[in-house]
Image (cartoon, rainbow, N blue to C red; front, side, top):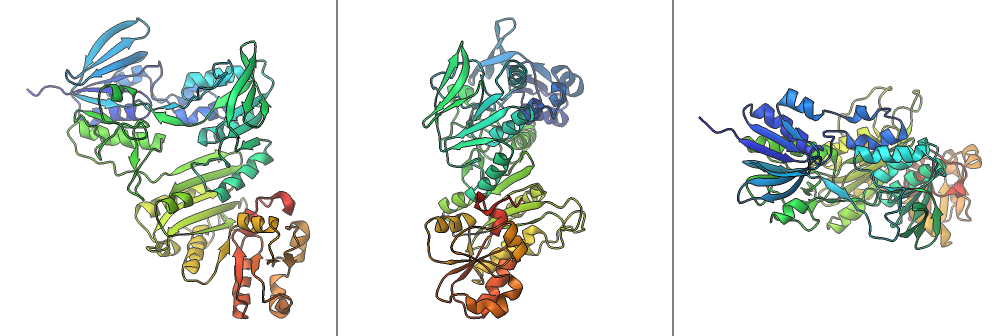
Length: 562
C-alpha cells in the first residue's frame, strides 16, 4: 500500500491556504498540515484599508475560512499561534513552537511549502518605537489603528510612503475625518507604479480631497510626548500628527529559507524555478516571499500581489501532489482606488521600458468611458508604451473617475499575448452606449501611436509644455477651442493664442510660419485635426499637446477639468 504523502505548509495568508485547499482536491489521502504564527488564517488582507475606513463594516467579513472550517471542509490540520523556528532539510523536519503553551516540537514532511509572505519595511530611525506609529499587515494591526482613531487623537495623521497601501490608507483616514499628510522620499506618488504624467493627475485629485503631499522629503526622526508620537521630522520640516502609518514598502520574508541554506535572490527573495520549486526539490515557495519572471523583459521582478500568491498556490498544489504545472510569470498588473479616481498600470512603465533597452514610443489621451451623452459618462486618461521596432505593446497606465480598470485588463491580455499596437487598434471590443463608445479610448490611443510611428504627427507632453512656458521659450501655444471654453478655462501665458478650429482655414495666415506651433484643445482631438490642417497648408513645425487641458496639472488654467 502506497504511503500517504505528508505535506506541510508554512504560512496561512494567501498562497498557503490556496495550496492546502487545492492539494486536498487533487489528493484525497495526503496528510496536509498548515502552520500559522498568528491566530487568524486565510483572510482578505487587501481589504484592511477598507475595514479601517468603515467601508467594510465588520472584521469578520474579511475572514475567508478559519481553522475549524479548513478541517471540516478540506480535512487540513491548521496549527495557529505556532511559530516555525527552523527547517531541518536533512531530516525533513520543521522545528516549531506553540506560542500559547511555549512548547517546542517537530513536524515531519515529505513536501514542504514556504508561504511566509513579506514584511513591511520599518526604518531604524529615531523615535520609531513611539506609540501611535503603525504598519498595516494583519487584522490586529487594523484593529489597533481603528482603536487609536477612536480615541483622543488630534485628528492629524502622517502616512510615510506614497505606495499602494499609502494611497488606500489616505482615503481610509480621510473617511474617518482625519487630516492626512503623505511624506514620500521620491518626487511623485506611486513612484514604483506610475509615470509622472499619470501620477501627477492622481496627485491633483488627492489634493482636491484635502490630502497634503510632501514629495521629495525623507523622514529622519519622530518626536513624541509622554511616549506617544506628536511630530514627524523630515529633512525639510516638522509635521504634526499623533497617528503615523508606515507604508514604505515590503521585503520578502525569506529568513527561514536562508537559514535552511536555500538559494536566495538579489532582492531577498527565495529563488524558485518555473515549477515554484526551490533549490531543494522537496521544498516549494510561493506568494510574496518569491520574485517572478517579468513576461515582457524576461527578468526577475519582485511584485507582491495577493492575486499572484493565489496563482502560486494553485500551481504548487499540483506539483506537490504529483503534477508538473508551470507558473509563467507576471506583467506587473496593479490597480488602486483613490477617492473618486480609479488608477491602474500593467507591463512596463516608460522608464522601465527605456532602461530595458527598448526604442520607446508613448501616447496619452483622455476620453469618456462611455458616450458623453449617456448618463454616468466619466473621464478616463490612458497612456500606452510601445516598442517602436516591433510595434509590440510594452505597458499601459491610466487614471480618472471613469472605468479605467476595464482598459487595464484589456492591455493585460494584449501584453500577455504579445499583441502589436496594430492589433489593438482593431480589437473587437464590446460596444453599446451604456458600456462604451463606438471606438474605445484604447482604439484612439493605439491609432495615435500608429500615427506617431508613421510620422504623421508629433506629440508634446503637458509637463514639457509647462516647463517651456516657465523657461519663457519662444513658441506659439495655439488653443483651438471655442471662445466660451477659453473664457472659462485657459492657460495664461504670453505664448498662448486662441484661434478656434472652425476659423483656422481662413485665419491661419495670422500665425507665424517661422515659429514652432504647439496646438491644444480640451482632450486633444481638435488639436490633432488642427495640426493636420496646418501641415497641409505648409506649416513645417507643428505639434500637439497630448491630452491637452484635461491632462494639464498646473492650477494656472483655473478650475480643474476633471
